[in-house]
Image (cartoon, rainbow over all chains, first blue to last red; front, side):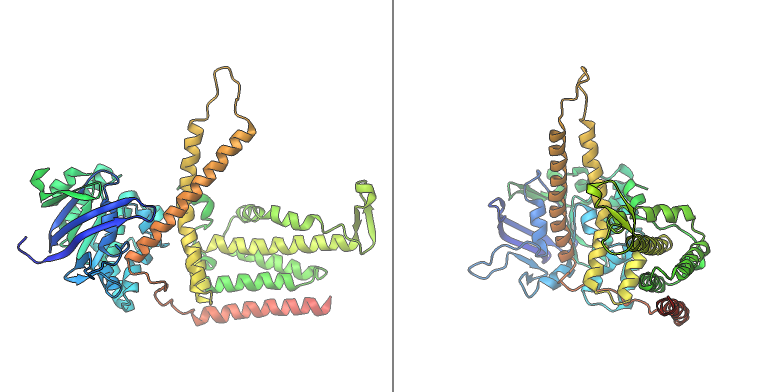
Length: 229
Length: 268
């Protein structure tokens, strides 16, 4: 890791309100452009970790004031959380949760609109993001008319439109048919963003990632080159 | 097209002038029509006939199958029926018929009958107008139009979210019911062991499950919104203004409706 880390997680622990300990002292440093596979059993804390990367979940304030998550050197706190949400694009596991707008256009425009961009810029970004994921011309389609593979690609476009430096993807290939999975793999390997990909799909990790992190019961047990798989 | 899709999307595709005209105009005119119909006393029946002709003309212009309009309007009939049933039996007016029920206390009067006609005619005309609107205008456009006409964004955003997840929910409900049906067997002896109460319990649990899943989904959707910078303010691109030609056309039609209503109220 010669390069400056773009994403730093430092000794992050998190306990859900119901008392379930999801993360125990997780450390993770990701360099710019790196693609990291995050694997582990269900309940190991993968999704919980992803939700911390842009402040949807936040560990309680620490006594010494050190942030548990830093993005591009910036500590994640109340002041930076909105800026960091534009830098870390979170793609949720179920596209039906992510695509909440009546049309594809509205959904892809949601992030840029929240960033306060001008109308022309919003339209330009929607067209660009849909182009990136091969969903050009889908603007006026309704999410309920898309296949799962199309929904997943549009879900990625919804965060790409915010031009994030980092993509955090939760189970991107789950439930896809072989064709849809191939298309998704091609898409993800063509994108230049730094990526953290939580998945059970080890073949995808091998094809896409240079590094793998294994979580077990909320702790990192393996962190190394993908060859360890 | 899934089952939910067919139920929830009444839009009947077409290229008629009615289909092509601005949704905001159509919505405003439909509201004006409903208001006019309901502001006209029922004794002015020729005017109501005029309303019916006007409505039918729009349906014909839109090239909608009349049968489809009537069938969709019929969907709301049970609600109208509830309102109408008690109407003929009022105390005022000249008795016409005494029903041999409840010690002869059910008396049909002329005032009651005219009230029945009143509710029936007005609700039917209004329903047909609204159905015509939904058949010629995609649902999304109706909501966007109401937003342009001044409906608060919070309301329109809520309606749009509801519409989006109705489909998801309907499919989820269908999956749950399939899972239940798949395990609803009959013992070889042919006895149906399940009592009505037991089956009702299962259905209740099904609804409970659906509710819990909905709550969880709501939480996930909110997280997805937060992740893309949602801060409580609903932003949208500026809607295009309503064209002046459409506006003048609809003002003319609305004026006609006002004149009809006034005439009916003064003359009859």
